[in-house]
Length: 414
Image (cartoon, rainbow, N blue to C red):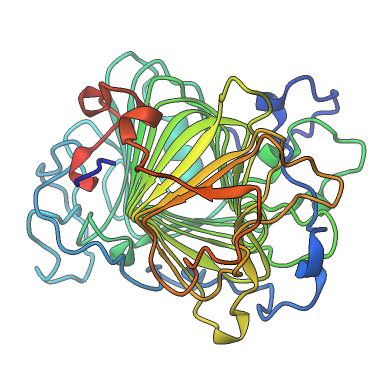
């Protein structure tokens, strides 16, 4: 059965107001306290697999989703001069190597006429109109924090790539090392936004292609929350992207979100959020240290938030980590997460899921699995507050019956 599944603000102001709402703050799950996961980690806590800050960055491996043809997003056929050293090798229908007419362009080398040297400058010069705009980014490592503000129109972010369908071909990286330990103790508002490498706030739809976004803070004993990507509005699609971190890598926090053919790495609660219904299609999820993949924060029975992982691959490249990761733990009592049609590697503990702490009430959590495979998929020793579904969750249940007609959804990645 076939399932279908960046005005600017460089963060410099540290607010001191008290947190007033969950979606404003998303301060994130606390440091890991569950069970044996406090005991040693095989990860060095400083180098995160899948991203490098030395040169053009490529993902650690290709997604096991096969070859797909056809162009995506806006027309990228317009001419532009930029020596990428590809000598024609980077071409074809899936190559995204030149910005279209009218695009705002970022080029760390300054070689492209009219381009901006940083992501922050590029974002600040995107026209704030109701029309669709594109930010095209040439290869490079951009060491900065970036906020995508609330634009009045839809936005496309496109990173240079020879194959838009594969995150392993990405050549643009945005990276910034910062964790909550770096913030003053009196800062209590929106702490995770303040440490995030990229914060997405735009409200009219955003499609992001072929960007690597990293927070290489690594493992910390306290206040280790170090977000790479923070999504704080609805109608977001991320396609063949690469998100790397350790604790709280991705905050999928609000509204409808789609992550397709994307690599996400971390250790502790590395996919988390409060009020998002998010579909993850054909994503590679790498555990780089002891912890849980997800920490969904659905707080009540109205089911404002749910994560569904379809055709995912959950793995670790370190054999000594076998059995040290869990699919999720409930940040709030009505946490909802589903893994279906996915390959679960031996990094997944046979219990599958874990309590937040020993006092956690799991009576209303919704942790489900369906038709998974691999050594981590055996249900025999699963915790009592998880279960198997009798049928798969349809993408329409998360993104709506009309999802295919939505501008921000690129069905070629599904």
